[in-house]
Image (cartoon, rainbow, N blue to C red):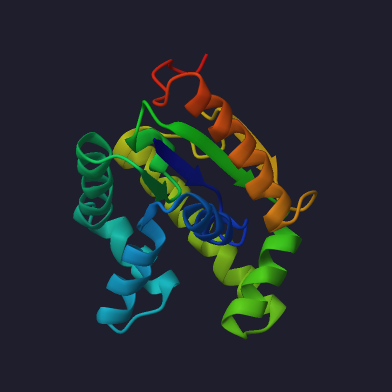
Length: 184
């Protein structure tokens, strides 16, 4: 089974991916972790690395190509990242959403900065990513039509989200394993 979990920063994709991976014994491939690691290796903030990626398409292309290769060659994994659903057309594709204020509060709790700073950085990062995704891939990040499930993490906690997802996954497994029907 190949599953993609996508969403904007602070929506809960990493938490849901980790819990779901543990539940099913699956491996997670996270584009966000790769991006954060590359930023840290270069000694820059996520916002600064986003600006660098705006000028150097090879950064996004490298991350996206890696996810496409993994999706095409491996099974029993979760691809987690903003564009993961676009990189794995035959996966069960999930988008997790939450209001901006909720997402920023979560980011503040994780990164220990002020709400104002986290809001500014999140707005900058999301604008930068939206621009890059449109320019590089022609993808409108706000178009959720490719996703099989869209779940609001403000309405459901992480355990309820995993319950919803595991119910869907179990139905797919009973029906024969791989999801092979394209989203309508």
